[in-house]
Length: 231
Image (cartoon, rainbow, N blue to C red):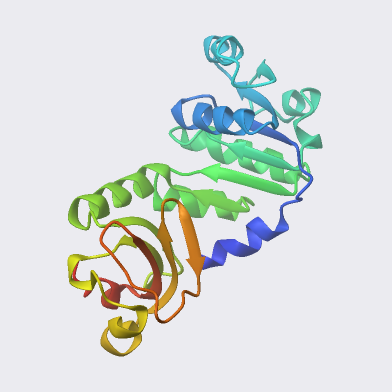
């Protein structure tokens, strides 16, 4: 996730309990299922009646409607324009995705998240008003490549193209050393944010805290410096 997206997430209402998801393919279903499990009311929409019926059968949405989202009248009748947040998960159908995004934004929906299948698609979605664009296939591919080449890095939060926060397994070279002895800032140009063990984290750990294999470190810094860690 890029730091520039923080503004979008800060703008979301914390009391928002309803979401509309347009497009019930694999990505849309995953969004619906996760939101539904977390207790939110989700309205699912798709032009394919079978997908609509299946989402209700699988109980991943509270309500589902079959309609053509490129038709503003159909969206209005379904009540889509009354939602604070609408996720457009059409992705692979460029024209339908762009027209739907335009329809939803022009209706006044404050928060529109749209799935893009390419960089050009993403730029077009932003041009017609999408507040936040996601690239699930690209992000999944990047995550897989990182996990294959840097398996000790458990999680990565991209602040920008050059800097990240990463959750990393304590390397063997750091085993038995204290935070002070690591000298992360002087040796690697990195700052230690937290140390974790047994799913519990200590923020701003004590300088005398001794690290052991199996523990987790959370560090922040330049990607080039992160890659120099002995992992």
